[in-house]
Length: 239
Length: 288
Image: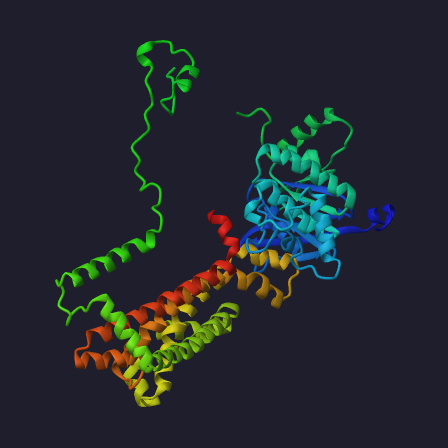
């Protein structure tokens, strides 16, 4: 892993004038953004604000979408989707190893599964796992590739509240251990503040607010929350 | 509040909280069951056995005309006699060869065409429309044309069976290929799968359920084609044996032929089901 100083000087993701449009409707409008290596960033925005469009552009899977601008991203990128996307016809370990080869792949897959708390479930079918466990397996699948950039598109959106809290802790812990750059797309303001060191609000196809979140105690949480909700155009005490 | 007990045991009743007024309390009785309930044992064999018993009883009582419907034991005797004489074995082998060759060609063609049409847009443009047209023409209607083209020998019979088989296999496999969840395609892209790994690990397993539907229809189709071909234009085979028996009024021989056809169908369908269960074992976890 690169030394800390270099991480700060060389961004992992660099976007300049990124524009994307669907059938004439501009979703991303000349967006500029740098994501430093190793930073945990959350991206907030209303539904339809282009959060997923941005993530898919960075992942390089926005085929057939009209657009312009420059975009650089690391070589090893992993994506976690809202659904776990485990192939139902493969057991958990082969699912985690999808697209990975090499002699030690199996060993790495087992280690990744152990790390997300699924050690011993290698031979289970995806349908035998609970929703939370499936999403853990999806996390293992993205981790095993040792990504420099982890893109997560509302990865906890389909989970129940209690499972989500556990998954927050797990994701933060995994990030602290492996230090990839993370871009977490979410619509949950509290999730963004709880997990990220930097929260972006996407508005009218550009970054409307760029907020650095200090981890210096719970007293600041409310203040961040108010500012983010204001940027999103939602009143904190609205009915 | 009403005391709700799902059973009529006293324990449940006493456990209920004291009702504010006595007249409000009432026992909940189970609703009338509308579903058919528990399955009887050996369900699938019961009906056929009953029919067989009725047939035997009616024959023994002399209530059936032996010329129209011979007794079950007569059919068995005739079958054993034909088998020992070697004529039944020859006819069965001839029929099996025809059906087997036609089925193998149809299966291969169905899979290859479905893959070509499902995996490339050029293939789809060239193949799919043609197969849909081919499907619109009833295959058995092609018999006169094929006899003129290929002669009345084995080739034309195998060709007709192959066409009957490839169509359902193509249609179902192609539908399954084009119906593969787009999210899995996206996943394969994200995971950096090569095209061949994508086909092997995502496309083929994803299309297998559809393929098996087509396979079972194809197997049934191959027997159907065989029966028709052998009864119209053959000088050997099971159908020919039955056609001859019709001329001589040998109902028992016709029934032997039908029993053998039935066995063919039953055995092949069971085999396909067994393969399907093994290959699609991951699906069982969904239904159980």
